[in-house]
Amino acid sequence: MPREEGFTLIELLIAMVVLTVGILALITAYSSGYVALNRATRVSSARLIADQQMERYQAIQFSAIKLNTTCGASCTEDATFTGDSTYSSAAQVTGCTTTDSTCLPTQTKTGPDGKTYRLDSYVEYACVSGTLVTSPSLTCGSGNPYPVKRVTVVVRSTALTAPVREQSTFTTFPGN
Amino acid sequence: MGPTARARLPRRLRARLAGDGGFTLVELIVTLTILTIIVASLSAVLVSATRTEVDANNRFQAQEQARTGLAQLTREMHCASSVTVTDTAGTALAAGTAGSRIAATVPSTCATSGAVNLFVTWCTSASTLKTGDYALYRVTSTSAAPLCTASGKVKWADYLTTSTPFCLPSTTAACGGVLRPSLSLPMLHVTMPVNLNGPSATIQGYNVVDDIALRNGAHT
Image 1: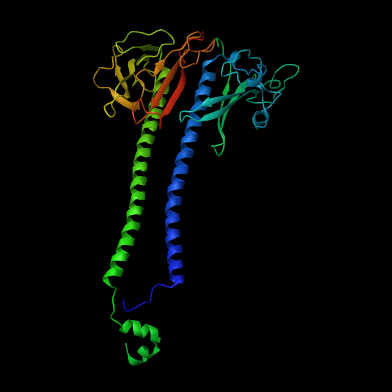
Image 2 (image 1 turned 180 degrees about the horizontal axis):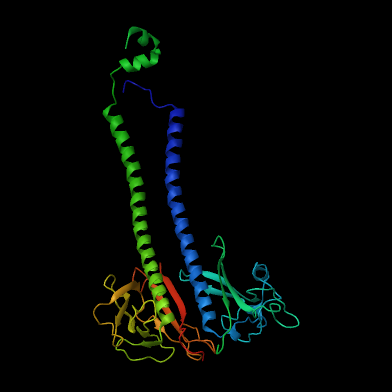
């Protein structure tokens, strides 16, 4: 080999940097796709859990829509529960004496993807019009309809960027 | 290139342009070998990524189908006036027993009945795509809820790993660990585990579970 001129170190380094940038960009594209897919799975799983819980509230009688806050550890309302914007200790509907899933403020559920999610249920009196008065009796003020029950279901998981929420109001009618 | 321009070029570059020495065979072979190794490893990554992508797509599609099927079923059951869970032969099952078929009566006023009083069957039958898996079908009639062997059935989901996704719980007989609450509407418990790799696979499963309140029922 008569010529001994190779690449200089600078040329080699530049080539390697360019190649590395290219390969890193490819890898980032794959991993961000993976992250997006995972997130979509989490959200749809959480949504399914929320749907199932809300459907259960649809099935029970108006008078049975209430929480059990006195059944021990599983009925304790922790800081995460009471820290939610929906929570109101004055308007909360309590008095359930069973451990049916509609009565539990906080419970753990396994989603369709096999991961566990925390399911928080809030049951509160609310007014369609007027302002809620709890004492001496429960009303929305003179001339306004009787308070409705507002159920909010919140599914939490560290794998979710934001909790998945569902809300529905329930009212009573004759025979129900 | 005129003489003035040639004079402006640096000496080194001029020498290189004038030289006619190419690469030697050895240099060429070494370069080609290195290039081959790099391209081969890159294409291996691409092939495995593509395979994963196809697999993830299929899985996503199967899950999507199960959810769509469940949404359609939910919509229909909300409006149905009568819902019975039966075995393959059409015999009604006791509360808390999982069955492969739902026989429902859907009145003409419902969105899914096509303005006639419709008898609707939702049932499972062996999958044609994966041995050991089941597919979910819907088939209708204006006289009586058909069996799953009837013709004209429409497939709503596939790759179910159970043949018995339906169950009606009572207050004492649970379905999948879930009892019907007291003083509630009747509830239909649906369990649709989906797995592209067949029923015995332990990974990549997706288990759609829901309780559907039958809103035309009575609170008991």
